Image (cartoon, rainbow, N blue to C red; front, side, top):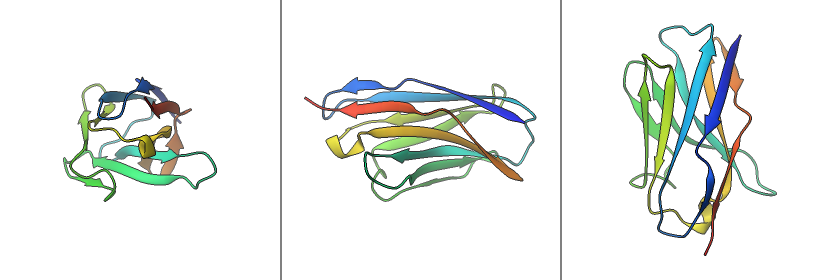
Length: 114
């Protein structure tokens, strides 16, 4: 089992920045993938970014150039640095861990509004 604890959401004005954190604990194995999805009201959950333990990363086109995912393998923690935030980035952001199975965090609300 893997437990994920997210933090860092909140209210920010358009053009602002936030950093989300997700700490994993439990049965953590090398070769895992950690990343983020988001779900806006009345929309399906969508992929945002992912980070492989070996170092490679992937991003959704909608966040490329604005969001950066990073990780600290020693702390089993993944971060999502969000810059130039737009109202359409408003959503609940979910962290996930993947190694044989998927595990999800509880979600953290990000609201971009003036």
